[in-house]
Length: 131
Image 1: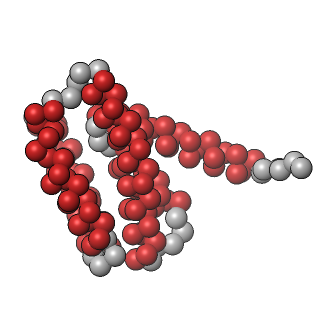
Image 2: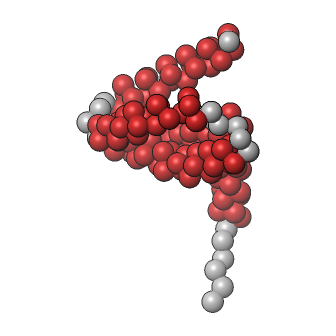
């Protein structure tokens, strides 16, 4: 059996692969940034602009960033580039915060989530430029 794929589907797949590669590259290089690219990509690709659609985009972003982050962390640690004394006290609170955020995702207004995300991106960018 042969499966035929339209030219448009092939181009879309290549574009998605490029976006995924860019997100992974930024996440590995900077330790951040991959999620920013992915949330915009999911928002552009997902025709469902309802509350549930927006929440799905945030959830899908986290699901994609997790394996990339784990791999980057492993490689950083294997190369001796991770300060475990700085990381250790942050891991448990970060995990608990991630759990709380995931549990609250379904209850928080998505307009607020978008604004919060945008403010954090802007603040982080300004902070990185000034330091």
